[in-house]
Length: 347
Image (cartoon, rainbow, N blue to C red; front, side, top):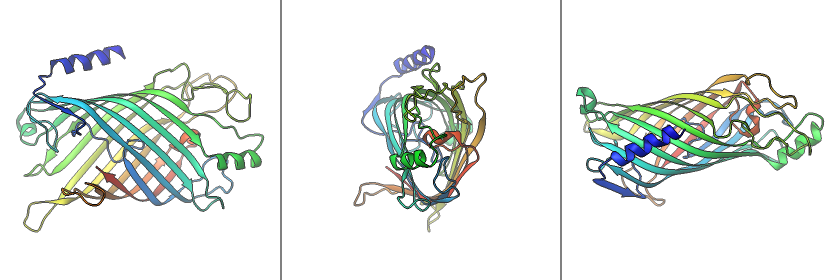
């Protein structure tokens, strides 16, 4: 870990700070639309999802799935002039510090009369990003980049009180309430080439992994569960989750044959996720895993002027997710499916 931090410091120190910036966003390693817990604003509604464990009325039902967050830029440098919406110039290096903060909520709308909140997740972190503009042939002409991202953060998850009360009443001998809360590192690399005469078509390829800051504690920071009081469960053993992702934006043409502000976007995130195991006896081997795929296709509109709520660029999309339930302590559920229509609000 300290070698990684040292590498970042070395790179930062080597950058000639010809173009420093403060509290201004730069397009270094922007999150993919399909990243399931990225710090961005997404509203998925209407959506159909499988019921979580211990539901009052099991089966697929209507949900409201919301993510609210933003990667707040703090300070950074570029070694050769300023960057634009494609990132740094060819041959230039850009380094920056961001603070991503996000909140996620999923609500059951029709399986239970009270429409309970099923789960809420909170994330915050510090994030270092580096981007380099490639200089060889085609990559130089089309402004291709490579990048690195290092993130150290905290995630805390909580299932809803209404859901918990009903689960305690219906499943008193088997339901437990676990406070999934952990500190993590996230290290990833990116390759981002552009295509087309005006570099208007953009591809983002990603690969990385998250691993636990405190692997001796596992994915939950405390072994004593919130219900039943006094019950103790064994810590988890597997302490990392690798992932890959890809996103392609195909910009449409305007009536004059130029680049339109509208584009078709396809985004996919694939993770080897841990299936949580809640038991009192210590685990003798790592938990099982399941390949979990979040796929999205939509229409993006890049706005250049400010509206009533500022400069907001929306993306309207269809989403299909299958794999480990990504919501809080429900990550003990495999073969979970959710699909629906949503909108992402880009700033």
